[in-house]
Image 1 (cartoon, one colour):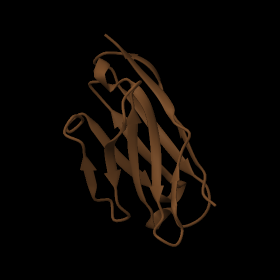
Image 2: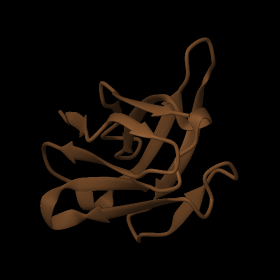
Image 3: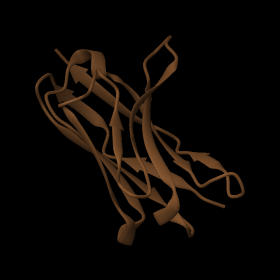
Length: 117
């Protein structure tokens, strides 16, 4: 079993920065594709960024150039560096780990990010 625990959320002013962390328990983190998603009140959960086991990255257009996803396999942790934050970035941010068809997909419990304008 895998547990994903997010941290680093909080309240920040527009234009500020936050770094989210997602720590994974268990084995096989290095082969997992990891991602960050977010869900604002009353809206669906949307993809923010992903990173493959080979560290290829993908970003939603809304965060491109402002957010950076990275991973540290030695620490079983994936990060989301968020710069130039906007009020529309306010949401609960979730970490997702895709460990493949045989090992499964896992979600963290979420961390709240609130950007005040």
